Image (cartoon, rainbow, N blue to C red; front, side, top):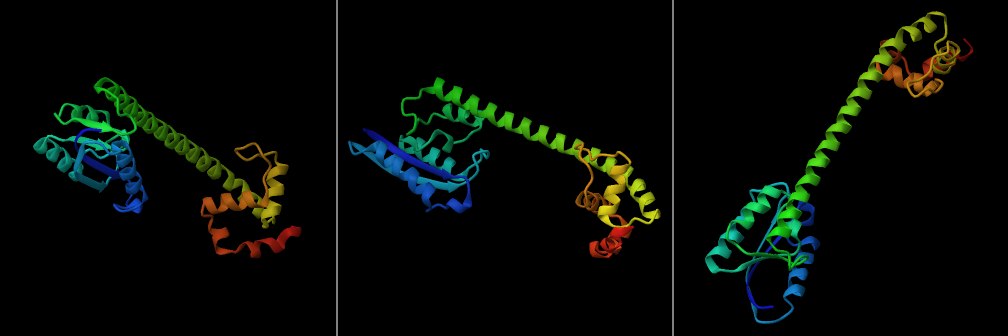
Length: 216
């Protein structure tokens, strides 16, 4: 390997540390890639920063050093720069040559495609996350509505003299009611709904004080 290089290392979590295994692995990858030859590693820059963040002081320093000393930026893995397509594409236009050890022969076209794919992946993750949150919200609303409708039923059972969790569950089942999952009620499910509704009577009395009335 010939030429003048500036190495840039990045880990995304503080727990990996500037002197931790993550950095050591990247340094080893760079040294293995260079593997002797007529080359000079003029400087090394390292920082802890999320790949989602484009404004990274040490990377900017490394790029400035590369421009001033006419060196090539050398990184262990392409994703050490960023998973942000716009950032990678702008970097390509900065005038600084860079080589990724894991893809040494990648040209601007290849890197550009990878950057767009990485960006798309991030967007899909965001879409999936929003969909999951929406589904959970709908489930929460349905459970709240079910709980609201169930409380009068439980109250009527109590007024009939049944106060134990198991007894209440048996009475609910006798009325043909099912949980939102289509299952029969058990003492634990009754307890869960009372806790969810912050039922005053339930909160004032412990489970043990309710259970002795099992024969009711």
